[in-house]
Length: 181
Image (cartoon, rainbow, N blue to C red; front, side, top):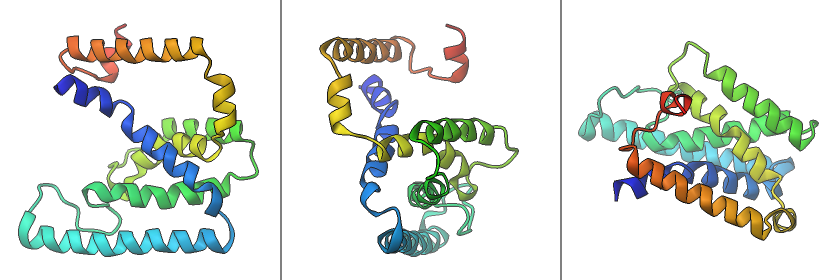
């Protein structure tokens, strides 16, 4: 059962971020975009305040940063969502391919920064940013053309092999493990 859990973890967040990017299509720019950004920011501020207060009074989670610049546990997604929208607005003059390449390069470069990834959820923001861009530019009609029977078989086989590898490897998934192949 733990192998199934880890297998799901290999794709669930990239997929969730991609879906978030897809739904950002209709309201990234203009008044609607500003309204959504404000709503996300308000949710972040409200829940960050509640969680920090509850942690100080009840939970006492180890290594908690009591700051609005360090999202509390799951609130990283709201903070990153704000930055994904702002970053995509900044990159809107580039082609979709240039946006994805830029996002991947930024994700790699941020990995070299000597900062704690907790601050402004910078690591997660840039690691998942390419998926947000892909979701934003996603087209179901294009997917239907690309997703042939052969591609479906390759995708299913790859997924099953990944699950088997996770089950056999004792859940030891690390970059060092990938490099040893």
